Length: 172
Length: 172
View 1 (cartoon, one colour):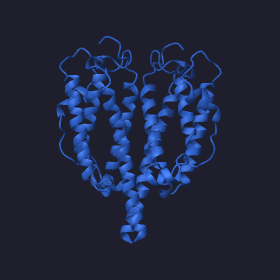
View 2: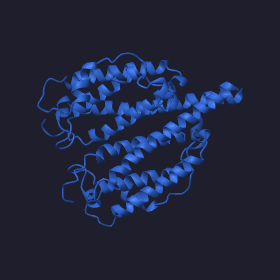
View 3: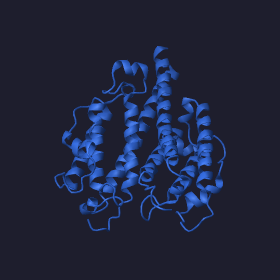
View 4: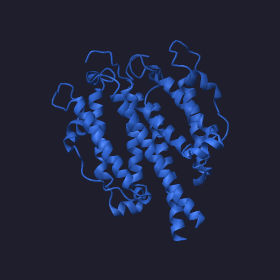
């Protein structure tokens, strides 16, 4: 029994740490978008590259897609998929949501994910995610929810590295 | 017993996936540095930012520091700490190793880490890393080797996002 208890604790500890890793990158993105005036995020993060506002929309849309993928519910903002995931940053288009709106969406998606994570048990993370069939999952048990979260954590870090190149003193 | 076996399998599966996440980002960095001629990596990744060669040295030095931190041995290239971790990219200095040399170091560090990881048992990952005291670890059991690997995985993704801004067609 002692060993079993220790192992249960071990899986819980591991999941907690993977979620903490997610949260740390998520908060670093939040801090970045609270650092400057909203106008600064209309700049490209580097010459000829995506605007910071586009990367914010892209990160909201990507995190939002975790809700159905982890079986936590429907996307909150499905309308963001086309402008921020399916298409590149169209710098002439001014029909995308404002920085202030995207920041609200970011908070809402993250709060919804945090609530969802809090209800998941350790073994839920090793269950298949919703886009893989039972047959394919049987062949490769790593196609589970934990892998999805690890991937999305790296995705946040990847774009955070790019966002930190933004020069906020340029005129938008 | 069944439950205990399942939990042991669960911890092993989780560790494997965290290592896979590390490996996927590590390989993406390797692919990036095999994409162009060595001269291309002498360019800054964006105007006024680090050169790609500096980021390669920085990633080698950071990954190398995992060896002592995880208790897997001494650093292989301690001489990289000053130019690539303690100091910013000094673009006028030509005393740093060449791209070809750094790529060799990168391969050697990664092969040594992979070998070290293969010898670690699941519970080793939940042991304290070598830079935290037993007292501090007792207060915060998340200061373990798994947290270190998760952090270094994000670190690779962060700089990979920046490296992918490199325009290889510029003259170095």
